[in-house]
Length: 285
Image (cartoon, rainbow, N blue to C red):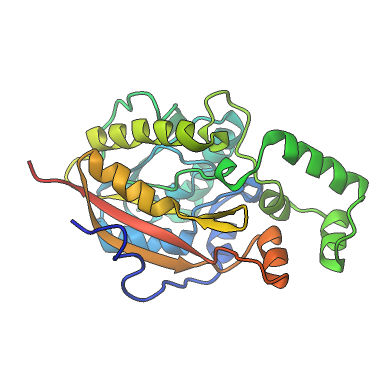
C-alpha cells in the first residue's frame, strides 16, 4: 500500500502541452464551454499505459465526453453524465468521433445517469475526473453575477481582462465562470462533508463496477483562504478505506492556467500548476 504522504508525484512531471489539435479534430466546438475537460494528451497516455485494445473503459461523470476519445484507440467506452446540456454535446461528440475515427473506432455508449446511484454495468477500467468546482469557492450565483459584469464590461482589471470582456469565447468563459450545471444532484457545487459523502458513494459504485483493471482519477488541488487544500491525499485515504490499493501517483504540469490563476500568479499569490493522476486497483481478497 502506498501512503498518501510520501508518494505524490514520484517519477517525472508529465507535460503534454496543448490538446487543442486533438479536440478540434474529434470534438464539436461547443465542447470548449465545459469548465473541466479531461486533457486528451493525458487521456491518450493513460489509455496506452494501463489498458489494452478491446477493453471497456467507463467514465461515470463524463461531462462533454472527453473519455470518448479512447474509442479512437480501439477501446470500448461507456460515458455517463447527469447534466442534460453536457450530455447533448457528448452525443454530438460521439458522432464526430465515429466520423473522424475511421473503421476501427471502438463502441461508444452515451447516456444520462447519476453516478451516486447503482451503475448497472461492469467495466474493465474506470477513468474519470471528479468535480472540484465548489471546493474552489465557486457558486452558480457568483457565476451569474460574473457573466453579467462581463456583459456590462464593468471590470477593468487589465488589458487582458478587457479583451476577454470585449470578445468572450466558450473556452475563455468556461475558465472564468467555473460552473458545472444546474441539475439538483450536481455534486460539483457541493462543499465539505457533503462533497466527500457523495464521492464516497461514487467510489463505492466504481469498486462494484470494476473488473480486474484500474480506476484512474484525475484530480487537482485548490486554493482556499490563501492556502493550498490537498484533495488527492484525502481521496487516497477514502478509496483505500473502500478496498482500493493505490499503485501509481503521477502528476501532470498544467499547460494553461485559468484566467484567475494567471492573475494570482502575477500578484505573487499561490496557485496550483499541476494535477494528480491516481491509479488504483482492487485489493486482493
